[in-house]
Length: 317
Image 1 (cartoon, rainbow, N blue to C red):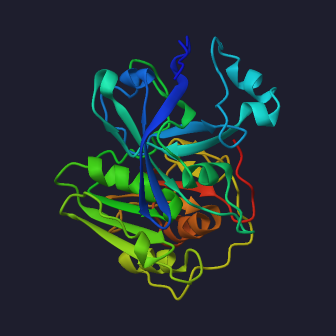
Image 2: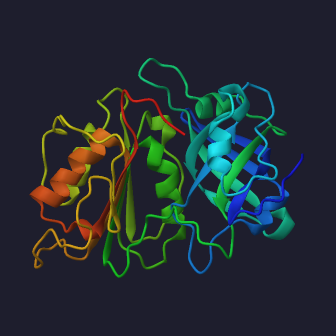
């Protein structure tokens, strides 16, 4: 395996598959190794829902693109290449870092998630046949440098609410495994089938509820369970006419341009000590956002709503 010595303030380097585990019909766990991973990580906090990018080969079975010698213009340089040469870049969550130093391994859980026509995306297609020795490029945080990509910031919240469909299961499971032992709250995870229910480490005070769809409409079980948990039961997820495919609303950023410094709710409710982290299909997340912020009066500064994908819209790099 070849490596590059990147001058960039993050890791942009080649890694190699050292282990593959088919966790369930919808999840594949891939463990990567490589010299660059000795420096992978963030300072003074857990990784939680740390986002990274993987660049897959443009041609199945071929080599990943080379980023050797690239400077801060790497993005434009990469985009200028022909698609079959530049490969496919997709976003994932760090599930775990195993080991330290030169033996550090990056663990990523990949969702086998087809599009509306039943066709797998490049990441899904790659993961389905991933084998030891396969190589990709990772873009991720380098210890000692600012990187970003962590949205789970509960502060001093007394209760946690974690919500996601299958695309957010790796992130929620990573968060759960890193919470303090005295954390309190609930996590609701909607997955395609009962066979996709995974074993996850979590504090005793955080209830984990798996919601296998088994043919139900995407998001309906999740919407009902969350609102029931908050004391506002509903029959089904409402139809959402306008959905931002780039939905990303956190206490510090708003894809819709909302004022992130202004409170959106009056204090004094029984949800004042709640911190909610919700991710998945943008339409489902939009429905939950409206329910929490507009209907239940939760301050937008207490929530992070993230559209990981949008039904009918192709994923972009």
